[in-house]
Image (cartoon, rainbow, N blue to C red; front, side, top):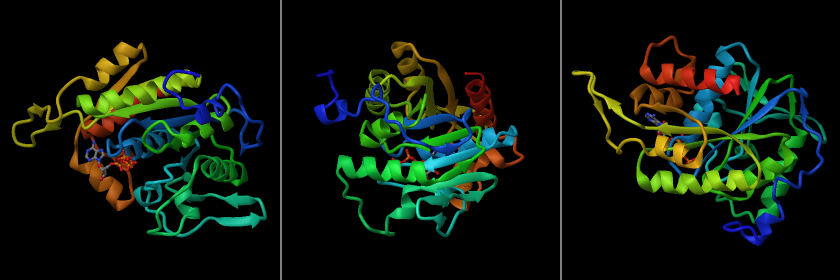
Length: 272
Ligand SMILES: Nc1ncnc2c1ncn2[C@@H]1O[C@H](COP(=O)(O)OP(=O)(O)OP(=O)(O)O)[C@@H](O)[C@H]1O
């Protein structure tokens, strides 16, 4: 048995791809955003990357596969439910030009999700294959934190899915992110790189950078694992406000350091 991967998950290894039909342009690229720990800003990064890619003129969708903490609809200001236009065909919702499907659309609000692996596999597969994604250039997948079934299922179903690992600078975060990164390696996913979020705070008065959560955890992780380091996103009020108001910072005409960092990261990703 592969070290660190439980037997039931090994059987779902992405090397054993499942033949499914996804209703999306054949050249579309699939980019998953993962983290080891929860709360490191994975969904925030996913939504801002999608927005920055959209601003460059590409057609983008987001699949919010975070079964346990779906937040993408709120971060994009989406309310309502997607429409089924046939028994097995669903039109994704659209906001700011981004098409969105969320596991949250099939779970009752305020109900805990108590799904076992096979149920998760079935639900992810159903949403991915029934959604009419259309002519997207990129589909961003917001995975739940950790190394669980959703990541493995998504990797199995989506051809050539690549992955970005998000961490904060602290040891406790980068150590757990390392596990997610190694799982991605073991399941043969292409790793686009590591993004460090909440890297520093810029004092409004003196402009000095304060490394509140320590420094360099993300870059060290990338170097030790031999994958690209994509960038450091500062802790910035406008990021949180953008998510809470339903209009991600990356859409704004702003010269904030965080927005510029998202742009630089996306320029790197688009070349990969
Ligand atoms: N760089 C940042 N600056 C300021 N606030 C941030 C930043 N990154 C994330 N946040 C805020 O931190 C909170 C958690 O972010 P988010 O929901 O993206 O984390 P997550 O890792 O996806 O969490 P989960 O584990 O629940 O999926 C949100 O309120 C978000 O607005």
